[in-house]
Image (cartoon, rainbow, N blue to C red; front, side):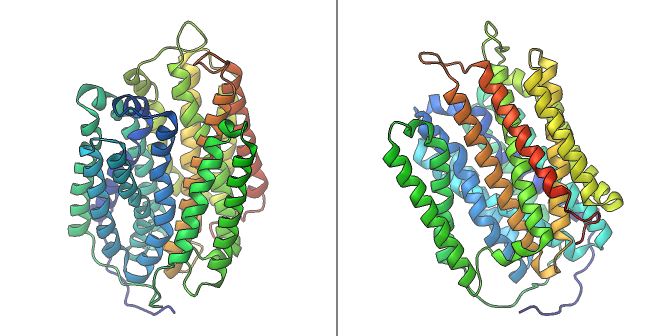
Length: 465
């Protein structure tokens, strides 16, 4: 049941800036594990399987919490919920910073995963306090800053961990999150709740979705290692099917589902989710493969780059990603979402195919990664903006939460599949994958990206359908 409330008071640039600061700091905290995973594995004596678990646990937690956060934001008001979520994130960051071993670090990452739910809450706040035209640009700015923060964290994590310690690479962005949360609390006015159905959290749906995502990650991550144990692999596939089927059945019957699957029947939301998944699968290939290719020894086909050098080489991609959000928001406002997404998809396909064809010089990788980062920012921001402005105000959190969950799953699936390609392409007795494995990863990612054009053709020209 939706009720009518008095309009929320308008906000100024300072409040939007506070949301932007929160997006930057949470994006940075989210991204510090990936570039420093080899260092963490060494210091904490982690096996490759444990390293894979550490790399995805935040994504899985984020995918679970995002729809809940969006629903609670619609029900109780975005500011009230986002401040409480950030308190959990800050606790998780401090736990990760102080973690003496892997179990404690995993706990910290689970708590940090709550941060992914802040983005749909930011969109709720923006739509509640700004006119429609200004809100589209503001959503683009916040989304772009989150991506930019993630890239900044990727760049800085290695030097901080090597120059100070792994503890500081978690602590510094956590301090930034604490400061940004205080700013949001002080500068952002309260927004009225948009839904008053009074239903509780869908715990059966949460448990079944948790099982589905965890099992999916196990199937993708361990598939190559389980070839010699087909019965175990088959058992995981059957378990995945059981969890997925049970989750869909529960969500369709629940009075207040955690993820309202009926929202996917709306063309704007359903198409946005499909597009976001395919685009993020493509993006994840460049995100994972390019740093790996930089690190391949120079006496083979790589460059033997250090962590600091790799961060420097990724800087153009970070800048492109941070600019993509605002550019996309303005583009959607003036040209419509279909034009922006089409341009982004074509740009990403060109970048990925270029990386597959030419990767013998450092500038090949720098330019290709920058093109993919720019294209991803254009597409995902356009999808989120299109979704947020095509549903009723009271459904903003649920709808954008679906898109963001799809983003997380697409990225996680892409990383796991790409990692499996490199593993399968590593000759026996060697630690260096064959060059053809990198080429295969880029080509498959480009193919997934190109498939999204089939969906783009069915989109309306404007934001709304």
